[in-house]
Amino acid sequence: MIHVLYLHGFMSSPQSEKATETKAYFEQHFPEVTLHTPEISNHPSEVASQLTGYIEAHSALLNNSLELPGLRAIGSSMGGYLSTWLVEQYGGKAVLVNPAVRPYELLQGYIGDHVNPYSGKAFSLTHDDMDIIKALDTPQLKTPSVYKVLLQTGDETLDYRQAEQKYAQSHLVIEQGGDHRFVDYHNHLEEIAAFLS
Image: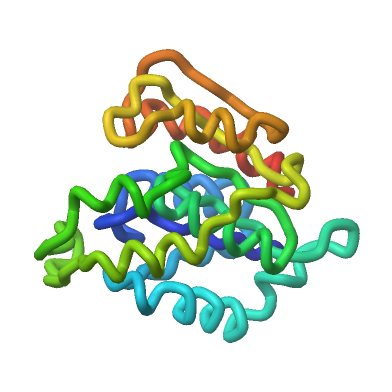
C-alpha cells in the first residue's frame, strides 16, 4: 500500500477539480494507493502544526519505500510550496503543479477579509501571516531531483519563471500557454503516478 498526500492551493479545497481528478485516477488505475487530501486551514498560523500533526497521525505516509523513505506528495500552487517544506523536513519526493515560490509576496495583495469559495468559511489575512508563511520557505533544496515540477507559462496568478529558477535542477515540465489551474492536468496523471511510485 502506498500513501500519497495531496495538498490543495490557497482558497481551494479537497473538492477542487485537480484533487478530484487525482483521486479518481488513483482509484481506477492504482487501487493500492491511498490518497490523503486534508482540508488545509485558511489561517496560516494553523497550517504548519496542522500538516505535521496530520502526518504524525497517519504515519503510513512516511513508510512508503525502503529505497526512498519519507513522504510522497502532490501539491498545487500554495500546496506546492507546502509540499516542498514537508519533503525538505521528512524526505521523500513530490510533484508540484504551478507551485508558489514566494507566496508571502504574492499574498500581500490579499491582506484583509475573504471567504473560501469551496467551504464558505470566512477568514482574514494579516501582515503577520506573511511572516508565518515566509518562515516555511525553503530557499535551498537538499536534493532537487526528488521534485517533478509541472509549469504552464500562461499561469495568470504566478510567474512560472520563479519556479523554473528554483527547481532548475529538478524534473521540469514547462508547457507553453495554459493557466494557473493547469490545463489538461489529467493528461499528466500517469507520469505523476510513475514518478511517485
